[in-house]
Image (cartoon, rainbow, N blue to C red):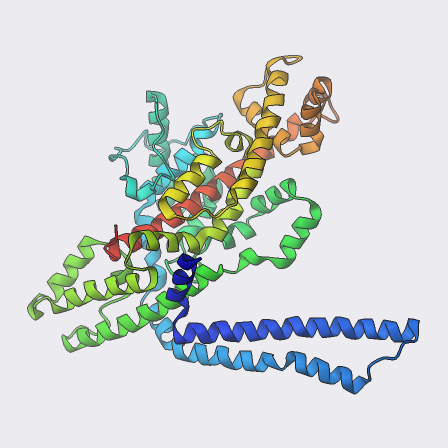
Length: 495
């Protein structure tokens, strides 16, 4: 609790953030009270018309409703004051090409493709051909541990064929992502639809759009996956609330403070640069992109002025990161995870409910190992372990009951690709398959899989696309966390 208070204090104890929070609180209270009074008025009308009890007068009801909404204008005023205090600085940050910090993501494209291969492509039984691009690209040494923090561990025992597949995937992926190709052409070449990744590459760091939940809340395959694993009323409730379409509390207030402080820093530094004859020289990339070449260019440009501005830049960006995220590496890592914990929990649970082999711990990685790595790296667990254990135990039970049925088929045994989809279908109880598996009804299972018109095996292909998309978003949210930590660690000189 003390750690939570300290983390909150860093992002909230800013005048404009406190005013913003107070204003939003007053607005929400007004709306909540207004709804309650409206319901009370409706109840009062019903009581008067049908029960004959004494009712409140119209004037009394009107005063109650006015009182309920009285705090809304006050909240709106506080929001306007907060916006007035921070708008110039936030606009200065945006005008400093904050959106172009997305180029730093793109500079890590090779690393991202390696992560995608480990998380998604490697577990595809079909091992699709990945197009007619280069057979491979020279592979650099494995990324250092601080770049993946155990979230994308290097697989053990990769054979020569699998290594060539990986290198080809990375090579064709680099070519596809760097070329403006239609999605259909790109997906045919690389073997996967990487539209969500390309969309992610367009979002600049510390912008209000750069949170993965917004992407997967709009993705049609993700929406279809939710409908398969959740009850209809929960899906409708999720669509009504639509919380994932807005950034989380931690992300929104961190970005708000970071952008405001960045705008102030840019104004100060550019004022000094103007006196040296270089007006508006510094932009957001100088503060966010950890680039030795960029620092060398600043040193060369201002060499005649004794390196003062270069030192100021290093001091100011270091102070910026430490002011927002803390000067302690462990605390800063925890703060980064808090920014994306909500988004991570959503996609983690969706994969747990859909990906049978991963949930049951049959892949090289699994939910328990990943949560262990998250806790070790960030001192925070975004998902309740009891819920994870229950869902994982359910997956293991279903697959344990399915194994003997698939190993003794009525006809030919299904291949690895078909088996993967059957496992997913049983895990989500598609067309009642899981229920029959758990009941041990071997004949009913094979009837569902093979016999028309009820046969489900013929229409399981769509599950492969759903599985790929969920796995891709799961990898993407982890890449997001690691990229932000890369910036915070390098710019803030943290360990």
